[in-house]
Length: 90
Image (cartoon, rainbow, N blue to C red; front, side, top):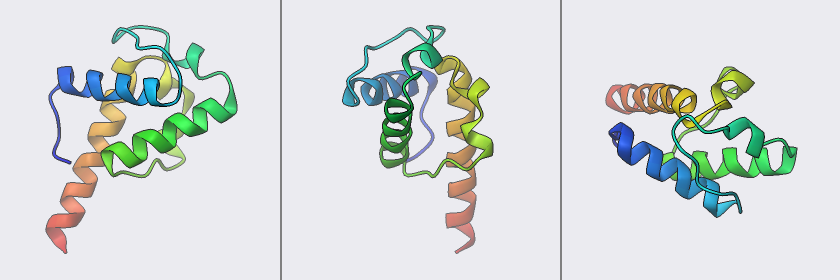
């Protein structure tokens, strides 16, 4: 998946929220509050990984990255960039 613009990223992340049974939220909405249940959190991370074709490492799973969609987008963009750089080197 190529790097998306912010508007599309917000929509895709909200789709992932809905896919695990959560409500859509605004870019600055309380994401971490929706992810308090560890099984929901894990399901959401797996949904993100499958959707974006990335893998969250320990650093990417830091709670401050999941405060809002706005704080999550840079982590996903970084992983997509790393993935694209890796694919270019193959």
